[in-house]
Length: 269
Image 1 (cartoon, one colour):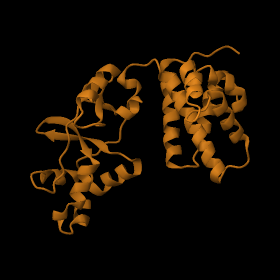
Image 2: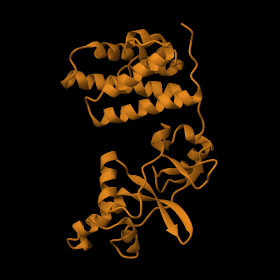
Image 3: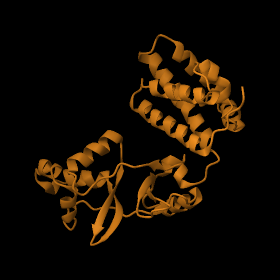
Image 4: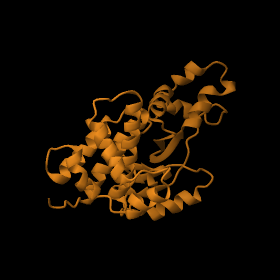
């Protein structure tokens, strides 16, 4: 079988597929199914065949070329890491098993997540632009939306921050609305039982009261263009010691006003 060299766009595509499936698996302790589907799609693409995980092992293993990650680290820290080969076989055998519930399913999900993390790293280990690591098309909050919906979106997706475009006259400025600001607005002891009223308040109206203790305040954050380097992002993260984990907003290289992504230290791990 001829070796397939994935293009950068193809690597990003499968990395995103793995990342999305891994996020779903983390939400559901028995949610391994989508990860298995991504492994199979990747294997099928690499081999140009419709087969099983066993037949895809060589092609997928060839993607993982970092010997330190595959062998040295598991050998040195055997209590914390499994060999890639063993992980792959455990996932393959679990895929073929008829028992997919309870503790067995949870173990299979854990192994599939570990396998996906290794593959994600292998696919993008040589990439160095923020566009390669950012979360694309981020969910945004809008001034006309009620606080109840913004709260719901944050809870449903475990978001700590959401981008929001604030208009200052004719100028548009992108900032962040933070979960702790929403919580403070809803739960502040001075609200005197106005929780339900505050839930139904639009973000725009909640911002109008920012001079008062109960008002929501948006947070300014740094921004980069999609073509800038990870090194530049790390410099910003290092300087943001007062707000660790604060997302960086990523704008289009071609259209500097178009928000195309969001980047956090977590995305660079």
